[in-house]
Length: 111
Image (cartoon, rainbow, N blue to C red; front, side):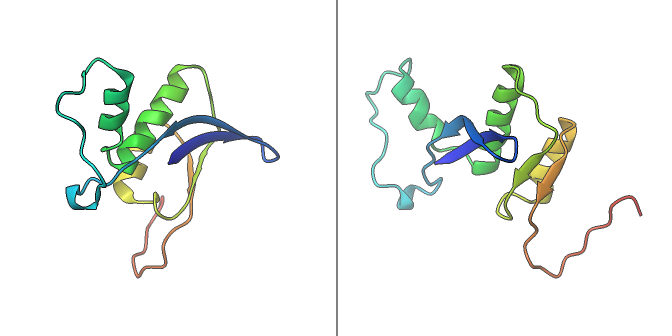
């Protein structure tokens, strides 16, 4: 389960969530039934479960901002702190604080 939440430093309020499955078919327990009505919430949730985590994060953030939530920055762990996702968040004019994996890569920011 991936959860998007808001915090003031003391409390945490869950804003949105998504239940994710593996994108690899071999890692899934069961496949979605072919005769499932595509108009149902169940179908939509099952389809959403197959999205990639970074894409799900961007969608949850977009939904939260569209409903009136605001944030000074986004805090994330090292799994999400990757250049493609950071670019998408910067395009939305969001500030990001993220733990960086211990790699040999080096980043340059404003010289």
